[in-house]
Image (cartoon, rainbow, N blue to C red; front, side, top):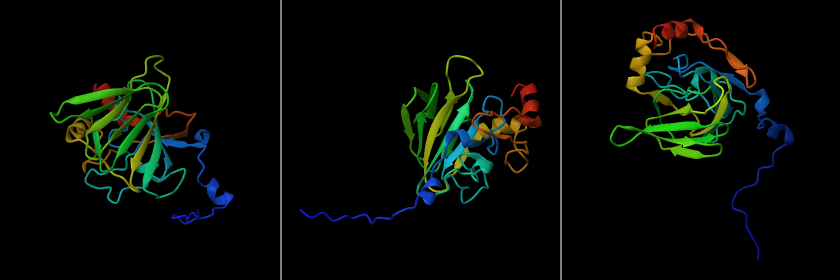
Length: 221
C-alpha cells in the first residue's frame, strides 16, 4: 500500500535547530515589569523560554504575562502559537489575581504549587500541584498561583507555564490594582511604578526589590 504524506517536509540545519535549544543553566530571569512584581508576597523570577513577545497593546492595564522586560528576551525566539516559561519563587510567593486572553496551563516541576481561581459564585477555589501535575485555565478565568512548599523558607521551587498565542496579554483584577495603588506600586497612569528590576541567571536569585517595595513593606502592604 502506497502512503502519501500530507504535511510538507521542511529540512532544517543543525545551526538553525541549535537556535531552538534553551539550556536551563543559561536562562536569564526577570523580577520586574508587572504591576505586582515588587508587592511583598508576590516577588518571583520569570523566565521567557519559548516565544513570548509583547502584546499588541501595552496600555490600559494590558501586560505581557512575563512582564515588560522578559517579553523581549525569549531564549527561543519563535512565534508559532504558544509560549513556555518558568516561574521560580520562594514559599509563600506568587502573583496576585489576574486574567489572560488565551489559555494558560501550569505544570509543577519542583515543590508544591497552589493554583487558585474564581468560581461562578465569585468565590476562590484551589488545587495543589505536585511535580508533573497539570492544570489548564481557559481564557477569561481569574487565577493566580503560589508556592506552598513546606520546608526551608529560602529554598526556591519551579513552576512551568504554557500560554497560547504569539503575543498573549494579561490583566490584573481591579481588586489587585487597588491594593497595589494603595501600596504606592502604581504610577499615575496605572502602570507599574518605576522600580529597579534585577535580572539573573537561574542560579542567581534577585536580591534587590527596589525602594518602592521596601516602603510598601514598611507600611504593612
